[in-house]
Image (tube, rainbow, N blue to C red; front, side, top):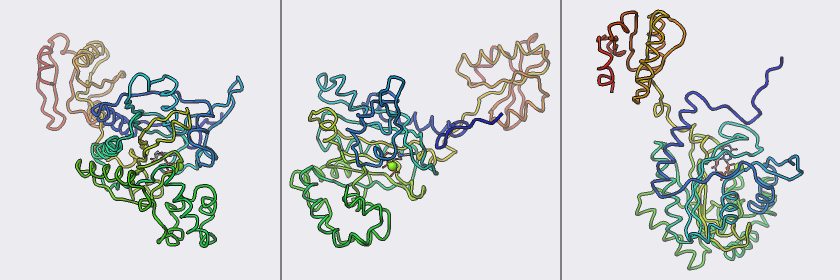
Length: 413
Ligand code: ATP
Ligand code: MG
């Protein structure tokens, strides 16, 4: 029979990879809850219109990357490609804005994008994201950026660069767009084919093209931060003031615009050199336009999304382990029940225990215990049950102590 394989761009996460996943998820939950954020779990699929309206036609996600299909009731549904539009949909649908004037959510969800799979780029991937809804203060921007920074610190991931920029409000961007188009027009033919398209659809994106030719061609382009109005400048300066206060190291990158149209004001990205062209591990910004786009309401918001798969690639393996405290080895089939009882009694008391079900030689047990990285081995043989004594062996020194069952817990904990 032909072997059925996982779909292209998807993968199973197990062994050390799932330990890394858990480690990142646990660290994120602890940190984000510490900052007062509540978890939100939105559905895996939504109406296609939500993403068309929220992310916008003309973006890579909507034009090329969505998993869209009709269900059996002929509704057009889409597997979520990102987390922000669903959170906004929930916020509007549940009238959360009427119940509280400030909402802080985090999510840890799988996302789906039809992309060419490569290292750090999958068709199903995972994101940790945060959203603050209902407030336009620069404090919110600074809080979100510094949380992202602290998350990286907590994971022990180094050599990361935090890039920040301000893309201003709609009016500023419209004026700047004109300035930029005027600047680009005589140079248009020298741009890469992608940028020639961007020139038509979203000229700001020409600035953060990775292509060397395009970068050289635009060295003296007018930059957005130089064109901010006084209020926008002040907002940006205040964000930076707080970042400095919190010890967040960042660089100002006037070329950073981010892919999605709904951003306004502050935008930021955390990047690494270690993952080739998949170097962005976290991206976000203020999106004061999005809620109007989706639900015709003026609500300020800011957030980030961070790629768990890429964080997993950067996380050191020695950060994670799941080794048992104790390996219970037993000899003689007549002793299995007693060994099983000992194992479960220890587990009930919070000790991490590993036990095998099939008979093995003493040597095979010892090998397995080493392989699993157990600290100790408990030796059970025919005398154990009758005498209520067990052998407790330190695997590092190989010293064996004979202990009473009743003292066992005290010795182990
Ligand atoms: P990229 O430029 O790498 O395509 P993006 O701008 O499309 O990223 P966002 O939509 O901002 O990414 O998503 C936030 C984060 O999610 C990214 O910084 C990245 O870490 C992660 N991410 C995005 N697409 C994928 C994918 N296909 N596979 C794995 N991680 C991804
Ligand atoms: Mg992308």
